Length: 63
Ligand SMILES: [Zn+2]
Image (cartoon, rainbow, N blue to C red; front, side, top):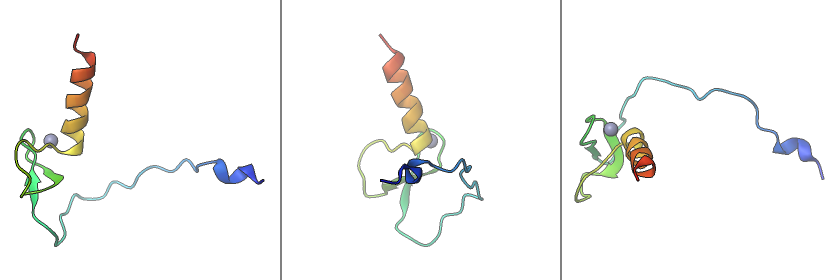
């Protein structure tokens, strides 16, 4: 057993320019209008990962 493989290198996530390459049209976030991970065919409210996380935080804090 070589446990050294369990260590994760401390590398920061690359933050490049947010460009949407050719692909399926994504629905835009209803809050910040950024492209979400959901296709436009999805019904209802669509949130980008950021807003989705924030909403989850708010829900978790309530009560
Ligand atoms: Zn958003």
